[in-house]
Image 1 (cartoon, chains in turn brown, cyan):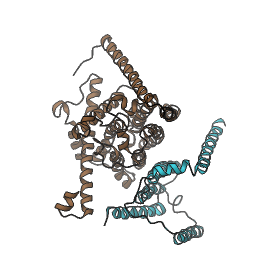
Image 2: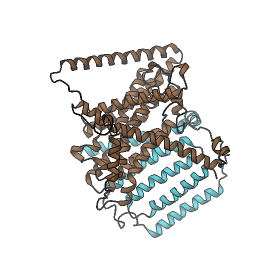
Image 3: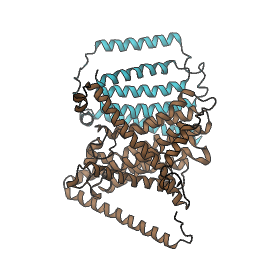
Image 4: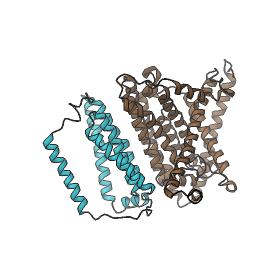
Length: 385
Length: 166
């Protein structure tokens, strides 16, 4: 800032504009790269899980596949269907991308300082800005003049609107723990050890974490909740009619959303970029820790997609309203009561969080043990590519 | 010119222009989509005025909730793209009287209010104080409103149940 105003002789206004543009470019570049790599990783992991190859031609292990895809899509003809609402049809992909990108404003790419803006209502912003995506999807469905697009768009919007509620409710628990709506304060309320993370603070925050993760999967239209794109019923949902660059933009928004699920889960529940005391504030390490956790969550999201079958629409709504919402309310209420009780005896908090983490660890060990057993005793050998 | 001024003009143009689309578009659905962005622009104004919490609630409730419901409702009505049936079929006399009346009312309110002027840069987070006010001083109105919403919700469920039984 000072560099720009003093050395280059800019007015404060233009210096602000330049800084904003630089920050936007950095964030957009990270987002675009991550969404591209996610699309490659998804196809690779899917291939591995289904004993086939996946893309492995362009670049080492096929990692440049997304560049090839983008070039191909940009060179394709941009078709606009007959009878489409031309103006809405054209602007919609950018609206969807804008809605997804706008979430990145309050999410840190590294430590607390590496946020575009640490709004003091950051969590509320994070929840409410999704409405741009809803509008974008509705517009896409409507303007395509195609009944499958319209059905897909309506389904998707209904799904996002109803899953927004459990997600927002589950976020109340970390807000209670941090005592603030700012994402930066949420990061600071957690430590670097697993039992200092919000997710393992109490049984209630573990429940909230669970609800939040499922809810954000559904909001991102990922399997098992990808009904809006159910190929067997709806061709490809709201983006059926899109081709060329506009389809690429939709695609980028969709895969970028996976990145955002990872980033938000990490920042809000899994300790974010926090490091042990003597390393605290090291920019490279904090980015590394943040990205490592994010990539792991992204892997879990992809893994779920290729493991679980798709829900039916009524099951989907039942899950949101009859199970997740009560769970989120219980988590909120339980956490408030717990904090009232533990307010008097601070040792309780420590012990509870360690016990919750140990229980989680035992479940994981049991899970890994079962996978090993299944792996050893299967009749068909798994081919590795 | 400050950054805030730039955004002020940006949001003004957005609200006035898209408000025009809401009123005069020949397609009801275009009006509904434009309304979303008008509400968004209003949230932008709230941010410029330092009402951060209110701005986010505006986006969440009005833009994200009410407006999406409105679009759903619009899509359920038939012949929405025919201007004769939808947007441009208005009562000239009645609408002039109603619109003019509301405009006069707003104008008189604007003239008679003494506006609180806050120096720019003196903006503070409002969430904390709003929460304290709602749960201390204004607890009764707050609870009454929540009961009203609960009643609305229960009656909506009752209406649906009635329809299912018959």
